[in-house]
Image 1 (cartoon, helix red, strand yellow):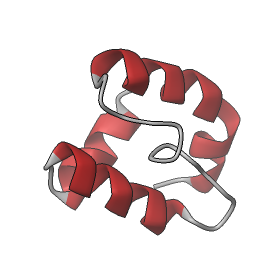
Image 2 (tube, rainbow, N blue to C red):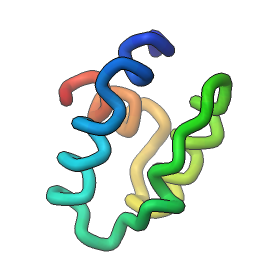
Image 3 (tube, rainbow, N blue to C red):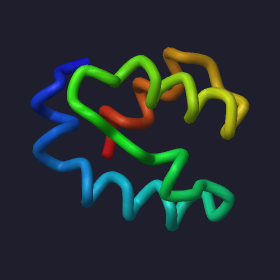
Image 4 (cartoon, rainbow, N blue to C red):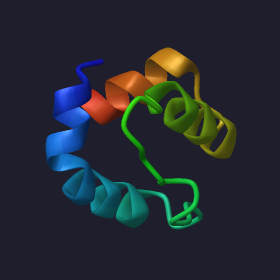
Length: 61
């Protein structure tokens, strides 16, 4: 996944994820530079999706 893609539109993506998955919290969606794997892992655990599914979901936003 391209780090710049996440960085550039993260606030917009975060809002869409919260609308789509009401059980996600701000802590679940905390993003820090270089921590993409940690973010993906939290989303996997919270949403019950595979790593590839989470990456595809983020790319499609």
